[in-house]
Every structure is written in C-alpha cells, then in structure tokens.
Length: 340
Ligand SMILES: Nc1ncnc2c1ncn2[C@@H]1O[C@H](COP(=O)(O)OP(=O)(O)OP(=O)(O)O)[C@@H](O)[C@H]1O
Ligand SMILES: [Mg+2]
Image 1: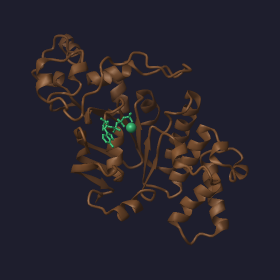
Image 2 (image 1 turned 180 degrees about the vertical axis):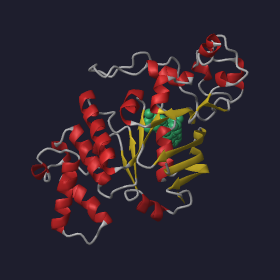
Image 3 (image 1 turned 30 degrees about the horizontal axis):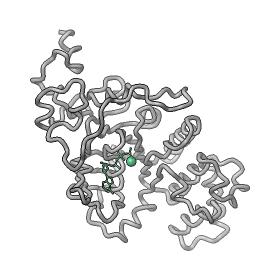
Image 4 (image 1 turned 45 degrees about the vertical axis):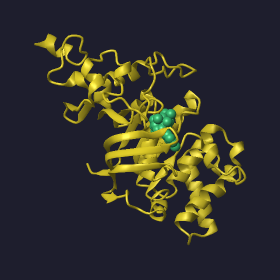
C-alpha cells in the first residue's frame, strides 16, 4: 500500500510569553491510500497541532521547527501560503468539532456548499452547481435535500450541520480528509450516525482519512490503524485489531480503561487516568507519561525510551519493552515468562 501522507520527525513549537511550548516533539506516521488512521490521546497531547502543522494553520506564534510532510510524495513544508491554500480544501479537506464556527450564519446552507464547489470550478453554471449541491446532500444522507437547500445553519440540528460540513469537505473530492473531533459535540446516538456515514463514504469513495479523537471507542469503530499520542510524542502505533487485542503501552492501557460505554446516555469516563498531562514548556527529560504511569521505573524519569518493535507492523515507546527490562510486575513480559 502506498501512503497518501507521510509525516517524518515533525517538531512544532509555539512562542509564548512564558517560553517555547514544544507541542509536537518528533512525530512520524503515515496514512495509507484509502485507509483511516486514528490519532488518539487526551487533551493537550498534540493531536490538533499535528494536523494544523500539516495544513499550515498554526497561526503567527506557531512554527514547524523541523521535519517533513509529504502529500502523495510532494513536500508541503516549503510551500507558500498561496500554494497551501490550494492544497487545503482541494487535495486535503478538513472538518472540525464545531460546524457553527465554520458556517456563515447568514447564508443558506445550499449556497455555502455551492460556493465551495464554485471555488474549485469557476466555469460551472448555476444550474449545475445546484445539481451538485443536491448530489452532495444526498451523499451525506440529508433527508429531503431539495427542501433543505434554502435552510440556514440555525435551522439545522448539530448532526445535520456536521453532515453539511462533510458535504463541503467532499465537494472538491479531496485525496485526504482530516477530521478533528468532528463528533465530540454531538449526542452519542447522533455521533454514531455520523461515524457510520463517514465509514460508508470512505468505502464508497476510497478516501483516505486522518481521524482525530480522544476516544479509543470511536477509533475502534472507524479506523484501520491508530497512533496513540501523549506529551507531543507517539507512544504506540499499531493496526486496530492488534492494539485492542494486545495493547503494548501503559498509556494505551489507561485509555482503554477509560473507554465509555456506548450504551450510556452520558459519555462519562469510566476510570480516568489519575494525574495530569506534562508541562510542554518544560517537558520531562524521560518518558512524559512516567509521572502518571503505574509501572514507572527509575530509568523512565531519566531518559526517553527508544521505540520497541512489538509486532510485525507496530511499535511502542516504553522502557518496559526493553530486552533488559525486568519481567516481574511487567504487564508486557509476565505472560511470556509464564509461557516458558
Ligand atoms: N496557539 C498555541 N499557543 C501555545 N500553545 C499551544 C497553542 N496551541 C496548542 N498549544 C499547546 O500545544 C499542546 C498540544 O495542543 P493540541 O491542541 O494539539 O492538543 P490536542 O491533543 O488537540 O488536545 P484536545 O483533545 O484538547 O484538542 C498543548 O500543550 C497546548 O496547550
Ligand atoms: Mg485538539
């Protein structure tokens, strides 16, 4: 499989009055063509900054200090603002958590989607544009699309607005869709409908998706592969089946214990991981998770662990996986010792 997106050793910082926030500290991953990669982690782990780095939307204080971002083999790092505008909304589309902030409250939704189509094809006639908008509304399963063309954002529910956002994102047939917590603000049942919609669209259109969420349960429903982030680093990366069958990082174990029950009305965390995320101005010199890790050893607070290969196509950054790590009390070695 060829990758549509390859991120290599990405470092991103923000300059603030308190110092340099090292939000992303050397992240590498790729999104395969036609596949969905999940990026999961708690608040502040660097998920959004990673996607904003790819899109060059970091604002005036943020900057990619090193690394490489290849879109279908083409380097994005050195592209100008103008070139990146063409990439965004053209080759890469994005949807965010709150559609209200991205929609114009004063313009009918049909017109907003129409504008998006026009932006990428100035020769299209009004009639053709309307047809295309209807086609997109049908694609994202908006009921009675003809009646909805003239509706304003406030007349739509949150779930319907998110469908419009997806329609806008798909208007230009992107090679890659970046979705940053697109269902977080929705009720569980609506959230589930949007995830199902995204999954079927992905299958119909063969799109590649980078899906950002703090919820491993959502990852399980939608993704082929997952990257687990913490403290601006990738703690674990694996195929979805592997990570649920045998999580190989204490942070992943912690996230799994906190997966909410899909049948519950309120998505409350079952067992949140105690403690709080690291200070990214002075990140710890060792593993960023060590202060909260129930298995932390002395080395964990002293030195960043190297990546350990934990299977054919997976890796984890944890000292417990080091060949010389003790087996006693080690959740990743105990089973193996007993099996001997
Ligand atoms: N504009 C900014 N200026 C300074 N620091 C920032 C800025 N944007 C993000 N950060 C910091 O970068 C780190 C990573 O933030 P990021 O938004 O990527 O987290 P996230 O994983 O997306 O979290 P969430 O789940 O809350 O969206 C955090 O420590 C955050 O405070
Ligand atoms: Mg975020």
